[in-house]
Length: 294
Image (cartoon, rainbow, N blue to C red; front, side, top):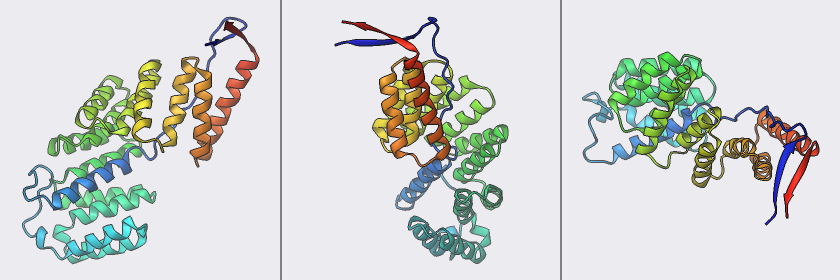
């Protein structure tokens, strides 16, 4: 099989101007979805673990529960406004046991872009119940999204103290460490998250991106390959894997991934970046010579 090697006429290696694509608004929605799944499982488990949530004595019989269930049903059907209305009623009907309602209302506000309102809800939820780890995890994510990584880490630490086996919280704390310039602590958290949950796409994505920043492209490629196997419908994975391929001079594979990304993504900025990378590869190839082993 013929092998084609690209090299510039002056013998220097190309300097790619690339920007890595994110998976979305930090890992907030992923983490929230995992907490929601945990809560649903807890609801049907005869003996839930005590560190997950310490409810107030009357919480199980609270009149708010029916409205919370209604809100979740509406949210899952795409009716965010209807869900907010139901959560407002839940909070008004039983303010002393409203922590869970504040939590879900805060998540919906965050998804709608109202981070300030979401943060207020998490604060009120924690005031109502200081033993719900998901409240601290969500508030930490919001602080991180607002450029406050140190404050975020404090909340993630508290969430981990209350629920040490929740993998997504380690991913979020790792990203906060990275934003503070502590990549070693970040990668420790990504590694531990994967020990807890070997199928956590966000951990592979974040660790792979960190490997790229460290110029460890082969490790990055391995992480992106695994993440794509687990979640083939996530466009950002193909973009960042393309960058890994480019750093390894595997331009055909990089171009293929960028083409896949362009066919999947609706992010205008990311599309422009992918088109620019494809153009830069074409320019590089046009100004390079081919060394072909017959």
